[in-house]
Image 1 (cartoon, one colour):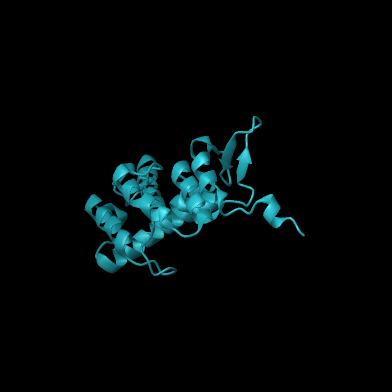
Image 2 (spheres, rainbow, N blue to C red):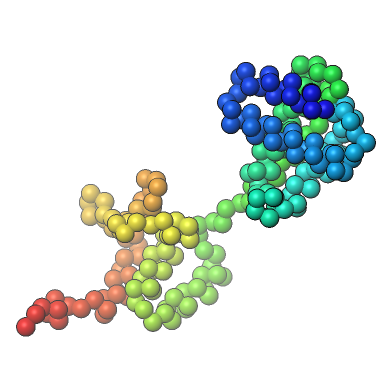
Length: 211
């Protein structure tokens, strides 16, 4: 089995980048290790069935990774499955000996990426959120959360916001600039509420003028 895998990897090195070959090698290697642990009687890829592959896919979804102690994420599992699928597909097209001769798994067997949380807040959740914002003692916290609520900015995006993220369009329209990409969010609909929230907390010019 190792000879077949090495023959295939040698052919892939002629056309693929080293990083790609590393991922392909990893996929076939971890599958072979799993076969050795769970089906030691299998000594040729020709005896591998689709059910073996599906059992392996279930295994990598639950088994802790050696480096993290946690199961592999969706992207890593997809790369493993894609690599093994490519192995069976290529060896079938090139008519290698000691292989199934057809593809056993495909893209449909890879895990689905979780759907992103929508940017809008459902009405039933908003009814619970707004009283909690109003109850905050700090007006600046209330103002910041009003902006976050209106813009739909995600937590990770808020964590990456630079200090100069409040911005203005050329015509003076207030906007929020998200970090890492040219995305601007119009803040006009929420600015009146924000200004009313912080107005009492900002000292007047007379109050801060010395003497």
